[in-house]
Length: 342
Ligand SMILES: Nc1ncnc2c1ncn2[C@@H]1O[C@H](COP(=O)(O)OP(=O)(O)OP(=O)(O)O)[C@@H](O)[C@H]1O
Image 1 (tube, helix red, strand yellow):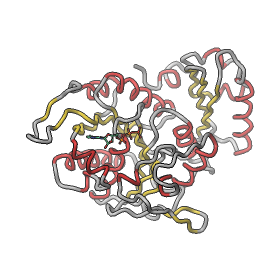
Image 2: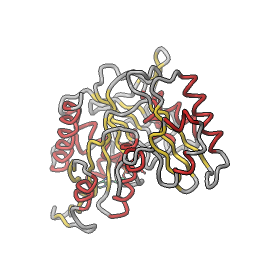
Image 3: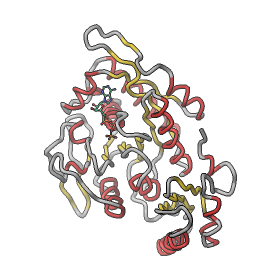
Image 4: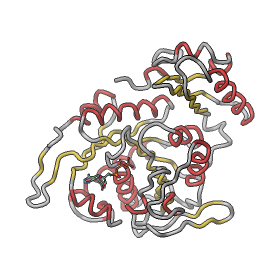
């Protein structure tokens, strides 16, 4: 398990099958490689674009694509151009972003993002929520804003208010419930930027619920609106933890600090007697966090009430039970991290 490995440890920035490819790049691009990986036909590059004007960035990206197209083993090329925030005039300005990510789908990342946002708001923070899961949005349901439509004002979107003190934007606020959104590449990136660069007036934190994995949305986010930090969600099983390590690596390669790892569905709470058991084992995520040198932010149990309240649009964190307290504790840690990393 490596963190940042190829991009930060060995000095040449290439790894996981990327060494040979780096030699094919135009010299200036090769010097700016922060990480380069080739996994199952997809070459993923992160380049340092500090100081380059927009036209220079576009030209460098085009040069990289041309150089790698048709190279041995390469089916697809993904390029993220990272710029020093002070120099990046293209990045939307606004609240600080806390990205909530996972390596794998279905681990409860959206549930966690919604409850984290509500718990931060309850703790007195001004917070907004972006549902960056463009293909499978779920935040409108989780916050009880299904069927509501986002509006626009002076060319920017106006978030939809929820009952929980958390305004939100989701593709579900634009499409019919259940309608699939079959967008790809640039269209997805454009949608994400509009959701982030909206009228988040006065919000200090924007919780962004990322889709699972390491695709276009993640790369756009890292490139155009880099998060202040990331929270990674995993279930306790080994396989989920391996995927979580990949998500951690993506952020680490892009120099986005990982605030910590949260274990969701940790232990089962019996709805009848309230007793807790551990069908998937205990302590896996905490040990994985330790191995990766990351803070462990706590456990949220598998509790049928969390699913029921999520489906009903009344987030658990807005209530008073033990699970609300668990989300409050998570929010306290994330809030403290933000205060300590201004
Ligand atoms: N701690 C929990 N206890 C009980 N049910 C949970 C818990 N966390 C999430 N769930 C339920 O698990 C299902 C998946 O959760 P969620 O949609 O938040 O996952 P996700 O990782 O965002 O999934 P996707 O990758 O599909 O977006 C939902 O039905 C949700 O209500």
